[in-house]
Structure formats: C-alpha cells, structure tokens
Image (cartoon, rainbow, N blue to C red):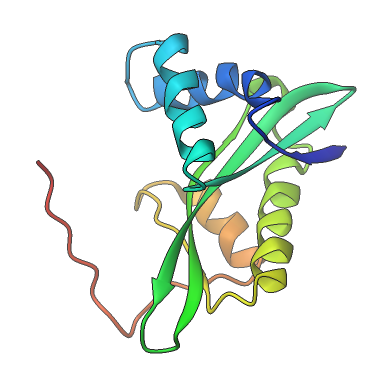
Length: 146
C-alpha cells in the first residue's frame, strides 16, 4: 500500500473517491463540483488530503481540516472525511489512512485530532477505538444546521 499527499497537480486522482463518499451520504453525483471543492480547499490551504493506493490504483482517502486550540495555543485537526472504495475494504486501508493522519498531526505538533461518526457506525467506532481514540466524556458538542 502506498500513501501520497494530494496536491493541485494530483487532485483528479481523489475526485472519484470523494464523489463516491458524498454519494454514500445520499448526495447527488457531481464530479465537476467535487473537483472544484477539493481544489479550493487545497488552493486556500484549508485541508490536507492523503490518498491510499493498492496496485497503483487510488482506493481510499482521508481529509483533515486545520482548527485551533486557543487554550493550548496550538493547531489541531478535524478528521472530516474518510472513505475506502468497497472493493478495497478489510485490507487495512482505513487504518493506514488514520495512522498517516496521526503522523502528520504529531509532526505539526498539533494539540489533538478529532472526528465525529454516527452513533450506529459500530464498525468505524471499533477502528477508532483500536487506534486509541476515545469518546470525549468531558465536553458536550453542540451544533446548529442551516
């Protein structure tokens, strides 16, 4: 398995996976808009995307968004998107992608990495816990959608 950081020059390689990720969440397919969204994030340095390859084919990606801890006065990261193509699942791709995020965050001297997942996504929860993540019992997270 090979891991690469997505750049503007290689963004097209992740677009089909990003589109499939959005479709998984019941969004309409839109390859053009998916590419534009990812390009904007990279151009504005608003995200870091890692792409996993098996047999030289892109099979999974993870996208981190930088955030900040004012109290610690450090950068932190939101692991916002994680997706592995169905044919490549159960081969350790998601685990390798998350470990790549951990290494990146440690290298950046980040305060923490955070993510959210659905309460019924038991398979993902097992992976996150296996990799040392814990449900935060110390704070409540509030959200308002528009």
